[in-house]
Amino acid sequence: MVLKYKRFSELANIELYKILKLRVDVFVVEQKCPYKEIDDLDQDAIHVWYEEDGQIQAYLRVMDRGVENEHVSIGRVIAVKRRCGIGSRILTDGIEIAEKVFAADKIYLEAQVYAKGLYEKNGFKQVSEPYDIDGIPHIKMIRS
Image (cartoon, rainbow, N blue to C red; front, side, top):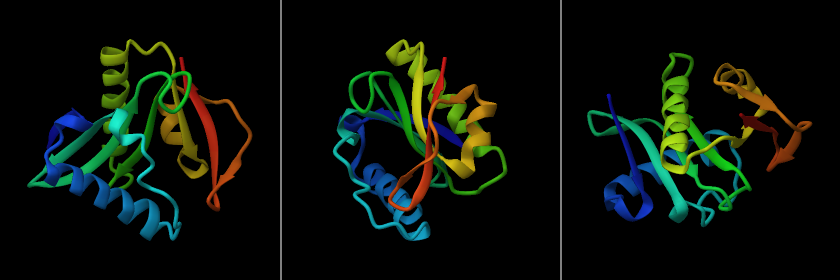
């Protein structure tokens, strides 16, 4: 697998298509959650993914302070194959990119409650009570 990361303006059309298709397939179709997946934050994000044989295997985006939150933030974390370590691997890489590119001292994310353990293993701490986003329980988390 090859790690890739690019700003929005650097993405080839086919890369952007594959990223958006994967996100819609998982967050809208698989989770049966119709919502505005393309949310106007992608243009200000660094897109990070693992690719193998031309297919995205894991993905997330990293945003600077002031884009989604007052902190550097990570979002849209996806692993095509679950419970095999690729989610932790892409998250570790996303953290490193946030620290290197944006000098992140704190990283914010909104996690689906079921994935809390993944984020805790990577140093994130829950900072809110569970709340609902489009019918799915979420929590806010910070990594210092």
